[in-house]
Length: 631
Image 1: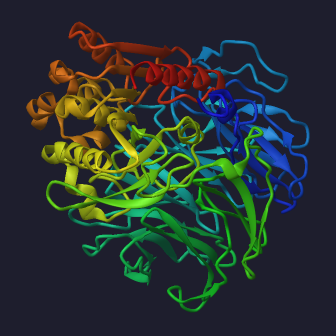
Image 2: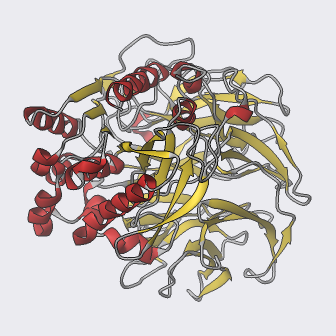
């Protein structure tokens, strides 16, 4: 047994999502002190923060008005991801639901002291930013048609149906902000995670989208920001058959795209830009680790810039960057293997950083946290698969002496699949390493962060090659002197849940147990039942129902369930709009019919993952008990 119970580890807090108020003196951030992320503010480094929202549901983001002491924040209900927008008056504490529609159902449950007893619409609302004068805000929503997103603008003091529908979309639209003069909106349309387009929507004439990025094939246009004069756009892209993302400038008059900074073999992760001063921060993702560049663009040459000293920060970036009103400082959150997430404020010109928040570690000494090592595993076709390997305290690389049998290992596979496991803090990982488990987090083919070619290696008919990468990783673990080869566990969430089930069906002899969290069990039923707004995007990755149904059936774990030998634990949220709960029901039922020891846990008030502390404690306590029984 470990030194601390799971409840202690899950009470390690995270502070993130920071932004400066219009006076530059007050900072807002999200922190999960109450068990779900709520909005807090503070006025000085390490000062006592003030909690501003008091809900059972988690707050997803908060954004200060540029002119008034008020914020807009987002919140859904029960994990259904149908976020509504709320305005908080930072002086009075009054909260107003800005997007509830009159025909929506009454919100259930008791209200806290500042909870508006508003009716919650069933539509999703995706934040698009404040206008510079603070009078209006923009958002994208699927109010009109659940399968597509439209563009809306609303006055700050209006509610309900008052928003003006500016443009009816035909796909997955999102907003990247207002032009410096507030006359235009920058719009992005996504066709897949590796193919997007950018448009400009002019608010002063008949609303039509002006297409900025016509192209053939898959091209990424991401993290778009207006240049200070409004005459161009900064963005990251792989246009021109680049394998990795680079920072570029798009001139709106000539439509020429010029390279600003290359990733030198790695992705430029995105840019945060102050559109008054031209000061910026952009990051490079170097095998999961973060390099930051801080600088200021030349007013006369938009591709030229001077750089400032790189900040000395613990760990990598977690979340976005927010400048203060004068762009003299910026706030961001950082995290690392052994560093829980906190907000730092950085002086732009000197690079000096100061920690502002004090997210506690629940009394667990930070020096007890274990750090990972970056390793590379050769797969079946000689592809090098990167991963992060963490040994429990007392083991060194190549040392198998601490236990005659070696340690058990949890192979934790990320979702996406266009995602990436990076060295960031995980209270769950630290809990299991404290209990004597090793932890292995592979970035199998299909993962983001290693170039477009690597990410495409698992597309459609190549799907099972990524599962073969997991087999190669397990073989590497079995040969490790500190590992017990008979006690290896597969764990994963969402698409990672599919990878767990596929690994159990394809390579049943490798596993002591499997843990499937909100995972896909059958690609056909998943695509048929996922949110209408997501289906086209997911078909671009997994294959389409119209053209690839037979293959999708063939690789679906529910149709190969007779191969599972290892005990299986299935966990899910009843309100999951991405991977409907029926995926958990069918794999648990079919595996049990085959005589597999199956445990199932469904949370009625959760969606795609577990956001509430009491549910997380229950889930991981039961996972620990399950592993104690079978591993």
